[in-house]
Amino acid sequence: MCKTRPHTFDFVITLGGDGTVLYASWLFQRIVPPVLSFALGSLGFLTKFDFGDYQRTLTAALNEGVSVSLRLRFEGTVMRSVKKRLKSAEPVVDGEDDAKEREEELQRQRDLVDELIGEEKDDERTHRPDGTYEVLNEIVVDRGPNPTMSETEIFGDDEHFTTVMADGVCVSTPTGSTAYNLAAGGSLCHPENPVMMLTAISPHTLSFRPVVLPDTIVLRLGVPYNARTSSWASFDGRERIELRPGDYVTISASRYPFASVQMHGRRSEDWINSISAKLAWNSRSKPKAFKEWEG
Image (cartoon, rainbow, N blue to C red; front, top):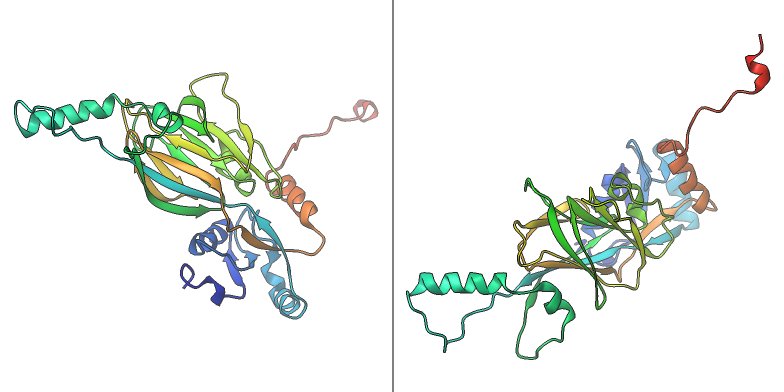
């Protein structure tokens, strides 16, 4: 019902922590009704209301209505590389095994940058879609169970940004800036900023820094054809999908934002208090005055 008939729901109540709110977002892959979240977890950046006061909160919501914050979500689409086949005119010497080896070599010789940036040929289709997901926090492309670092090509619109050697790459929404993005060294971001946050996970370089991009850009994170191993894509920590050499993920702003019910008149104050109290932001012992040291 959540996927096929989202208009059936007037609003949603969640009981738990931020993971419960993310699960509610995952259920509604298109239109999201207003989500009223009660805090029963540990951190609770997304859970705005105290469960001990649930009767008054729900009564006021039903009688007086609610105000919502439309939080940016991402739409991520997995794109699979379409294998090139030998032309029928090309001779095959040793049968099927020889043809298979030649096709594999043909794959390794392909260039992902040329295919995504170069001019598209009308008679040649290089990739096909294989699943689309709406996410509230982040999309991550990482090395998965592989013991070596992953190599990731990053594209923005029609430009090749860079190639990253790292444990992975995290593309976060402003809401997800306090989650995996923060752990990977990314910046904190107020949830009402319309931006995309690009952060490398343990990059093997001193020069890569987190990047903040406008939400109008379309990002593509791909595995080069000559990569030694596959990479893995995850969407809000769910749906772990293997990306083989030549595959990539397209990331753009979703048409379906997440409607989070807010406390009246506390939008910025609530976010600031969350990072100050729950992350102990910039917390340190204050220096003592000179007189306190006398005697």
